[in-house]
Amino acid sequence: MVLGGFAGAAVLMAVFVLYALRARHPLLDPRVFAIAPLRSGVLGIGLAFFGLFALFFVNAQYLQYAQGYSPLLTGVAIAPLVIGMILVSKRSVGLAQRFGGRLMFVAGMLTLAAGLGSLSLADASTPYALYAADLFVISVGMGLCVPTLSVGVMAALPSERAGLGSGLNSAAREIGSALGVAVLGTILTGRFADGLPPALAGHAHSAGEALAVADAAGGGPGAHARVIEAFTGAAAAGFRAVAAAVALGALLVALGLPRRDHRTPGTRRTRDIS
Picture (cartoon, rainbow, N blue to C red):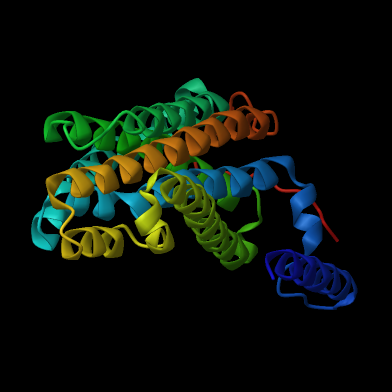
């Protein structure tokens, strides 16, 4: 079913591209991706949200199951993820104009990867202060790279095509988010199943369900701890894989970004795609 889904997606993508190349007024002209800054910006945004939403998939489960937080406290506990973005994002575009978009992108993505990699060390005994520090590092990375990339995508197109640039930004976020959840979710489920006791192997699709079954079976604190250990170990494997993908992808995407933008603010660099 999964392979069939990928095959069907490839066929639909090919049909869409062929139609868009021939249409008089296409929704998305594939030739815009010949513009290197735009192409790299879209890929970079997708990669950033790939890492961020991988975190979102695990974050609430970790705080509630491993740390024992209530849903309300879990929502409050992710506040550091907002603080870094607020503090950094409003300055990142100015920093990119001064030091270059490529440098800001690489710095932001490697910071994001470092935060995700650090989260792979978290388990049930990790103090919240350390976990909050990791969330703050991730938010700083997002604040450094995402505004710069979004502005770069918009600036690569003429002003009359601003709607296309905005749509590309949104689509890249959505696709990257979905892939982040899919990749980390797949790794988490597979490793979680391997770490569970044999009697609970059929409940690997949900940590909450596995804990409920273990408690109902009278396994006691030992069984509960084994489920939590299996979950945090699986999450750690997922975070390491996602962090590595973000770091490697960032280095590849950076090759298409300009080292330094010498244009004055408000001007656009465009390319005729007709």
